[in-house]
Image (cartoon, rainbow, N blue to C red; front, side, top):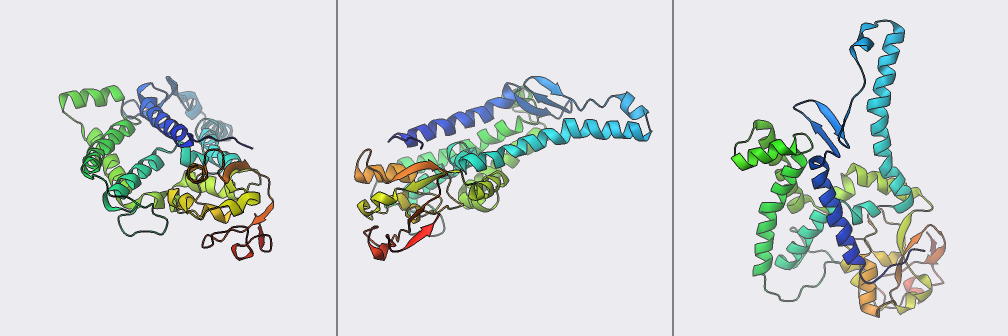
Length: 321
């Protein structure tokens, strides 16, 4: 079993910020980028070449064609298969943990949710959902300023950082200092900025649920894996639930944690763990991280106040998870 603490949210913010910094620094430190000027893929400071020298093309026999095909597979196709395999493997062992603890887009969407909640009292711009947190009257001016600053600065920073994956960061820096941009740099910065702006305002977590390929791979393999990490409610203490619905209101993915079923939208962020600790007291929360261990647990009815009662799907009404 995986241990947790009251500062789980703080740990998650650290991993999210650290991963964003890594994304920003990878092209700057030549860890990974493609230079369109030289048409070279750079990995850890070294040029990644397909190794297809002129001698390969000089041999027009079947053997020569086979050499070219093999070299292309080993140096171009196989490495990408290995990279893409990371997300199914993550799904098997940790579900959508990457989405909740590292994904830069997820972090951006959470910030947008938070600001929208502070400004208009709900996470979504379009309608209020049953699990939206209650917001007390607060001074909104500071949140208006933060929101405006975020809309102006974050997309531009993201545009500059991600354009650095295809244009040398030094070149981008010089163009910014001289305020003289080439078409490619302008297109990259503007394109990424608009993408970030539109998704953070209008799309948000719908992208995580229905569009993101990395998230979908983790979702699928995490769902079928018998050992995948997930958040579970302790069925033996279910009757201690006060029906405060704090766990549901804390979930920005609209999951119902008390249902105690595998939910493909859960990103293992642990927000429900923190919310339950806040309600019942430190160390007394009903939720925990758990890997594997399939068992029969009471199905919880969130409309009821007592999870142990038969009307809540207690011992008399069980489901297999």
